[in-house]
Every structure is written in C-alpha cells, then in structure tokens.
Length: 306
Image: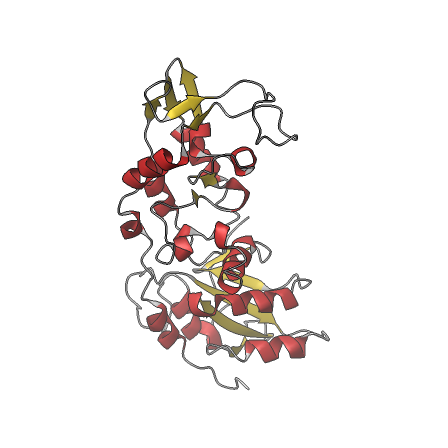
C-alpha cells in the first residue's frame, strides 16, 4: 500500500500538518526544525458526510482535546482528532462506529495506514480494561513493572507468541510453542534456531501495528538473552521426549499425536535457569515517550470547531 503523510492540502490545515506529520518545510510557514520522535500517536480524519451515524461520531470526536473542523483544497469539510496512548482506547471506540466508512483516513505517527489494522490496539485495550480476566496473558511490554515474575511469560504478539513460562504436567505443555521448541537436536546438544524465532516475531508486526506499547527492539533484547545452544540428557536440566505418546504420559491431550523434542526436568529447575537468564529484564522495558504534551500543545485549536 502506498503510504501518504498527513494532510489534504494547504490553507486551514497547514498548522496542523506541521504538528502531526514528520517535520517538513511549507511555504509561508516557519521551519519546525528536525524531526523528533514523539512516540505513539494517531491522527484520524473524519469526512463530513450524509450518514445517520455522523452525529454520534462527532459527539465522541468532540470529546477529544485536539478536535478540529477543517477544509481541504477542494472545499470539503472534514474533522480531525489526535490520539495518544493516554486516550488510545477512545480511538478504538470511535473507529468501531465508523467501521463501514471507507473514506476515513488514519495516520500512525504521520504515516497513512489501513483503518482496519486495529488488532494490536484491541489487544492493548482488552488488557487495560480486563486485566484480571487476562492475567495469564499479560503483555510484558505493557505490564512489565506490574508482573510479579522473574522473567516474561512470553515474547511476541497475537498468535505468534513464543512462550518462556512453562508448566509441568499441564495442557499448556502441548498447546503452546516454547522457545526450546525452536531448534535442531544433534545428539546431546540442542542448537536454538533464533533466526526462526525472529521470523516468528516478524509475523506479529502487522498484528501489533497500532499497539501503543509495541517495541520490536524490546523483543529482540529478550530473544538475545536466550542461549544459542545447550546440552540435554543425564546431568542436565533437560529431558528428551518420546517420539509418540504413550499410556505413561498421564497429562497428554488426545488432540496431540506427538510430543515436543524435549522438556525441562522440573519446573523449579527451569524457573531458576530462566530467572538467571532474564535477571534485570525490566530495565530493558520500553521507556514511555515524553513527547505527547509537546505535540498536543502544537496542535492548537482551529476556528469554527463547534
């Protein structure tokens, strides 16, 4: 998809354009200076159209501090609202009211994106609103400081999570893909396939596109903490698994016909190993960007915003 920068043209919207798009020079406008990364923000341009739902949409949009009524170069009215992490879930509510509108324009950090790519934002808002219900899926990037754990439960997003936590004698053993499932077993050594895990993380980028806290850099740092290889077998913390399920595997689920290559010898030993590998992991959490106030101040107020 060809991406475009925020802005329908010139005139009434030039001031806003310099505020929300990567800084560029415009005729008659002072140079705004070099581009500064202001963190996550989304600009939504709402067309003025004949629709029964428009009054409801505008009632919600007017609650946004940055609401503006603008006119493009064709003389067509449209409405602009700016969202930051602090009111990201209001964006989701607004977009749900306009999901049948094909002419809504959405810009993520100044780049136009498809309005339907909101899976990551839905995940973010679900965790914010229903934290207790989704306690076992708490996102490390969102809740790292709140999680009472020695290492993240998983890295990645959506269906592409790579699990770090492990439960003995549990359905979780078979229903989830753990980091030690990625690799090649050669005798008593398992070589961890980190490039394959990188590919797995790449597959979650589209899902996480609109997530306010997504950080690929953080995920790469967590991945780098895992070992490149390790020994298995007698005298180690790892046990090779049988190739087929047998009656002695009392905790297996009937929908699985084979087992992973290996498993930790015990949860206690596994947790100790992971705690050592991920010591100080919270220090690498994404730092909240402080540019929201600066950008909000620059948006100003348009005339005739009522």
